[in-house]
Each structure stands twice: as structure tokens, then as C-alpha cells.
Image (tube, rainbow, N blue to C red):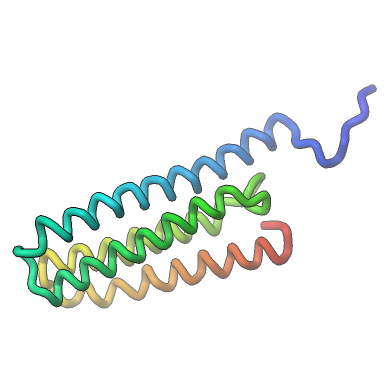
Amino acid sequence: MTTRNPTDLGATDQRQATGTRNVAALSGIFLTGTGVALGAFGAHALKTTLTPAMLEVFETGVRYQMYHGLGLLALSALPAFQGEQRGRAPALLLAGTVVFSGSLYLLSFSGVRWLGAVTPIGGVLMLAGWSVAGWQLWKGKS
């Protein structure tokens, strides 16, 4: 009979921990990478295409995308976000960023004003993601 240290993760737990960390990290990398590309696109190609007001809307989308991409990268490095059921906060942050920034991108290109009503849904998802992250850190469990 082998003695197992209770702090050791089993093979399944290690795969789950790595998978969750990778999802958060890959989401963060995707958001920041595309944020850089979209920021450059906005600064150069859209400067003469969009009105100043719509360019500002676009830039707000890029800014929040970058903030949350960097936040996801930071969360992926924290031990509290490794293991089973640790993907709730990153999933909420990713979904919120896609809805929030995506609606702003669509609004800036199309000028369809009702898309601005979709943006707060993304904001609520992002707030929920940070709330879940804080709760997980405070409680030390999912």
C-alpha cells in the first residue's frame, strides 16, 4: 500500500488543473493578441473611415478587451484557479469580453444604435466573472 500526500494531485486532477489553466491562458493570449491587432487597425485604417465618435466606441472595445485579456492571463497563473471547477470565472470573463467588445465593434462599424443595448450584458458578465474570481480567491474553492 502506498502512502499518498493529500496535497498531491492525482493524474486526473493534474489534467483538469492544466486544462483549466490553459483555457484561461489561451483565452487571455487570444484576447490580448487580437486586441493589439484591432488597436493597430483602429489607429491606422479606421482613423479616416469612422467618425471620431465611432472611433472612440471602437477604442473602448479594444481597451476593455485588453484589460480582460491581461486579467485572464493573471488568473491563469494563480493556484486558486487550478483544478476541478476552476473555469467559471475565466469563462464569464471571456464571454463578457466577447459580448461587450464585440457589440462595440459592431456598433462602430454599422452605426446600428440598438447594439449599444447589448453592451451592458457583456459588462454584467465581466462583473460576474470578477466577482466569482474574488469569491474563489477568498474561499479558496470553486
